[in-house]
Length: 301
Image (cartoon, rainbow, N blue to C red):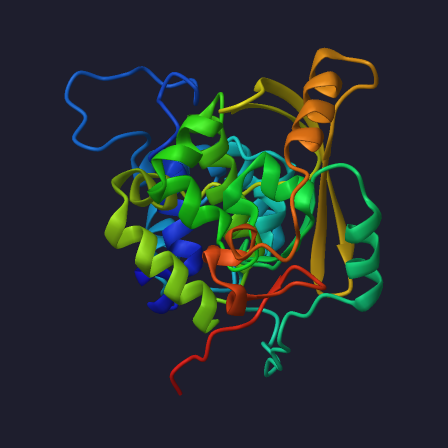
């Protein structure tokens, strides 16, 4: 997260978005000898109605408090949607940053009870997409939904997870954009720094997507996955905030082909919950068999 660590988040975002807007999109002639992708700084300034020198100061972090009117103009020039525009407006230094008190992410007992009763794939994730708890149907759908896994790490570093998604390219872009939205101004959070650093070193695709500075809310929707046993499944996804964590559920249309396949998957996955092979990582000490929750590994101080 080099750009965040520099303290120039506004400039980094403006530069990344400027490079994604073509001259044609901005209503400008393409020109014959452009040395930069997207728009030039002076073109953005002209279209936004500000001086080129002032825009240069914004990108270089010399002015971190532009007016809302200036930001609205830049959002228009850069073709930002509502989510991206809100993100841009939140990047200014006008609001003092209060000291953060980060609490450990914990799954409420009532959510454990709910997971135990749900007959559809359901799990709980933290802000960094760490899987904190899951029910047997979630694990039957994907072993990468076991507690202790990280959904982003699986998506970029596990070939089986990549094959699991019918449209992996879209899923990868959506998850990275959602992570940047989730991070917000919490850029020194050790968990985010660790995860982004690991993926940036290990995945070229992640580095490319992260450099785009896309922001999205990864909420509900419909996805198609390829299960190695029952085949293709079309599932709806709902994400429900519960205290400091998110409950995620997947479910098919009633009486659909995917509904029938999910029932088959449920029947095939009926196993002894005390079987060590069914627990996290295949080790009985890796999870609490009563809650199917990962026991946190000790972290170095």
